[in-house]
Each structure stands twice: as structure tokens, then as C-alpha cells.
Amino acid sequence: MVKELVSKPGLQLYGFSKSPNLDVFDNWSESRVFSVSRNSNKGWPYYLNKGTTLNISYNVKPQGSSVQLVVNEGIQGISQWLLNNPTYRDTYCSWNLIQGYYVSVANLKSNDIKVELNIDVRAVLYNTKHSFYNCTFSNGECIFM
Image (cartoon, rainbow, N blue to C red; front, side, top):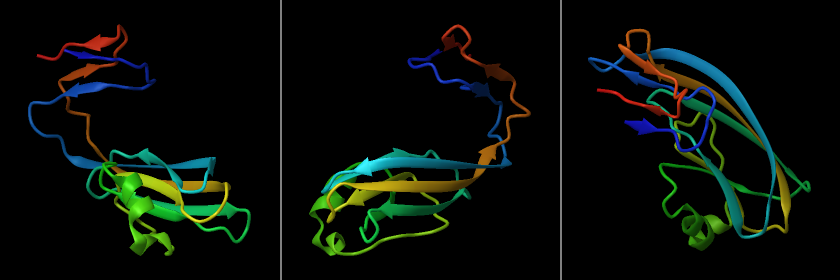
């Protein structure tokens, strides 16, 4: 039994007799505008399958300010890594086309800054056409046997 603790539109549970193929492609874009205080960071988890890519771009205001963009497998310790690692405090890190798990933007030098973050996702998804069970959590739970 799987219970939906927080209502998320579109959430579905599928059942398969064997592992489904990882052969469906989907693209989408996300844009976020947010503030980051000095010596802090903001981040978002991404649950990505093998072969998924992220193309990340960002703008920082005021002009001349800098941030660190980090894509890390898991969130454990990312705040401490960003704030306490002297190797990275004075560097500028940016990657494009990342197979990542957690995207974080850190402000280690500047006073409060505003960041516009754009993420283009090219996702590889499991093919659900041949599932023998599909539940949409319409009553808040799904029972899969």
C-alpha cells in the first residue's frame, strides 16, 4: 500500500511484471528567480534517470556579483561543503549538460543577490505502456499486490 501524504497533481503508481524499458524522452524547461543571502545557498532535488541531461544557465544581479553553481549526487553535506571548503570559496564553478541529482546555487562572497536560474531538461523516462497496474491516487492511496 502506498499513501499520498501530500497531494501532487499527476502522481501515478505503475506495476510491471518485468523492468520497463528506459526509452521515452521528454523535454521541459524551468525558470526560477530567487534571492540568496551571503554565505548561504538554495537548491532543488532532481530525480533523474541515466541518460538525462540538464542545460543550466543563470544571471546574477547586481551585475558583477558571483555565485557557485553545484550539481551534486545527493544533498548530504552540500551546505557544509560549499561554505567550509576553502578550495571552492574563491572559485567560480559552472557546468553545462549535467547528469545531476541536486542543483544548488551558493553565494559565498556578495551581499544579498538575485539569481535567475534556467534549467532545460532532456529526460529519459521509463516506458509505462506495458504496465499491468496503474493507480492515480484518486482516493489518496494505491494498493499494489
